[in-house]
Image 1 (cartoon, one colour):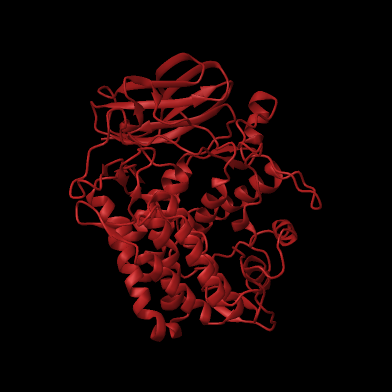
Image 2: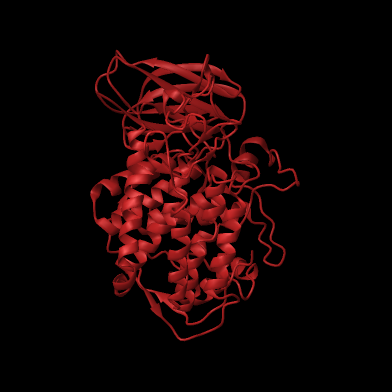
Length: 508
């Protein structure tokens, strides 16, 4: 399927986030109607009979933002008409599950002959619809006369289907200042469509990876901006605090893992020294490009991330990952810097079957940096939507770190980062502990060595107790009895090879 594009009326983005018409024009490769029909046809190819399901939702989502980008680049409202028609074609495929809740139901993940619903499916499709709703109700309210009814429906669906349904099913968890969604491996069969079947033995709940959490975070941000309800602001904060708290800082750049444990449910059954998922930066899938887009969206909404975070992400992408060659750009993964520091070499991990590894330009950073813009512009094809949107929207504003929605309150999350290349994961579960209860003090190392785990004062300057000393090969999980700890704010510090990471906790 061709991606349309090229320009018809250039734009600039004001400080309030509204898009204003500028002087320029061009022509898109495809008409809105042709693009719409190609998208619908492609979507149908990925159905399994009459069913949609997890794999279908990823494919169906793929073109959704392009309709909106094409409108913003051309100012042709026919693209909005096409967006609504495509969204409606997806909504018509909603089915009713055994508990009466609607969703995109289809083949269960890795469970033959069973049907199910993957939690991310709803938010994958409803997140672009909330962008449409924000566009026509907040950015360009004159559009509300025509599209307001559709926008209201998408907001209602996002609130009920992407959030309320899954909270009712029990997969949203909060712990201290953080929040995350879990997997939901319940299934049903066509022979018994009125009953959810519990997960099979050995398949337990676990926290979903960060790239999936990010879609809920973006959707909550938009719902907050549209509705003004603080509950959505709180939800987004919790999701993005969780992500930021798991960053590794080194040489003024960030690295982070595809998956991180969030609760005791993430421990591997029968093995308290291991987790249900591997913990590392994904070696071949560029999930981090989407995660960075979510972090940038949060920054523009004033949630969790500040300008220093954005500059560190730019440094990661352009000083750690990129080879510096504009004509022949090559890319490492984002953990290349910490690997080089701790191991003396870059270890790329397992490639895709075609031999490729993760590492790419994080396109969401293009508005911030001139070098990122040069790299991005060279990879665009005239006639594509990406090219049109870049030239007519992004490039009309000079590079800079201005927040798009500067009118929204700012609530950055100040986490105590320490430069560390040797420890890949460090956390305390839960971060808020009732005195006398046990807490899981967990870490994973990049190198083997002598590990020291300490309880420290709230500012980290004073050592209060040694919790654990042990040789570390990969993971050390320590169950800590807090009976002797006075209520208050503390940090736990893990030290390995003269470098350390800290995690703030509270004992009540």
